[in-house]
Structures are given as structure tokens and as C-alpha cells.
Amino acid sequence: MFRVTVKCEGILPTDWPNAVADVAEEFVSRRQKVVDARWDGDALILVADSDYDHDGEALADEFSDTVAAYAPGTPGYRVRILSVSVVGAA
Image 1 (cartoon, rainbow, N blue to C red):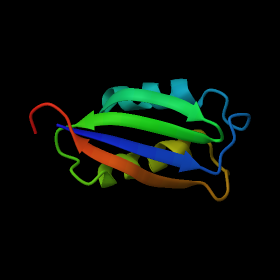
Image 2 (cartoon, rainbow, N blue to C red; image 1 turned 135 degrees about the vertical axis):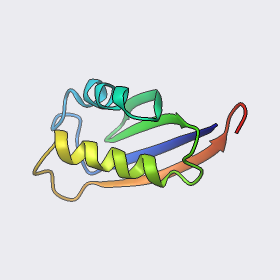
Image 3 (tube, rainbow, N blue to C red; image 1 turned 90 degrees about the vertical axis):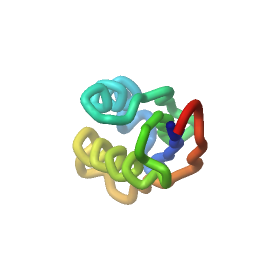
Image 4 (tube, rainbow, N blue to C red; image 1 turned 120 degrees about the vertical axis):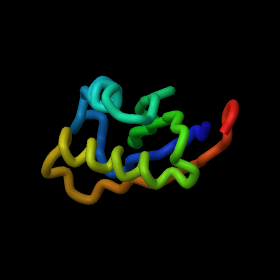
């Protein structure tokens, strides 16, 4: 199992006040299991477990899609992978 941490920069909490709840709700139907979603200053952090995402790219792509869907018209946001680690049995 892989634990992936991704970060979205370029959106302020005031621009998307329901971000944490929206992200958690969106990922209920996805293959990754959300471990944590939170604002860290002006960045939105998502931590999720996955049995297949060894490089974090899948979570980053799906997180970016979620941001685009829930915060349309937000210019210049960026999603990047902060870390990928092995947890439990891989």
C-alpha cells in the first residue's frame, strides 16, 4: 500500500471555503482512500492510501481534476506530489 501526499497551491481558503469537505466527498467513490485533507496555510493538502499509485501521479491527476471541477475559473493553481511512502503490505 502506498501513502501519497499531494499539495494544491494557488487557491486561497477564502476562494474555496468548503474544499476539505468537497475533496473528501469526491474521493469517496475513487480507488484512493483519503487519510487527511486540510488547509496548510494557503495550500490544500491531500493524503491518501492507494494499492497501485507507486509514484503519486494518479492521485495528483485526480486531485487536479477535483480542483478544476469544484473551483472552476481559478487561474494558476498547481498540484504537486510531496511524497510517496510504503505503508503496510505493498
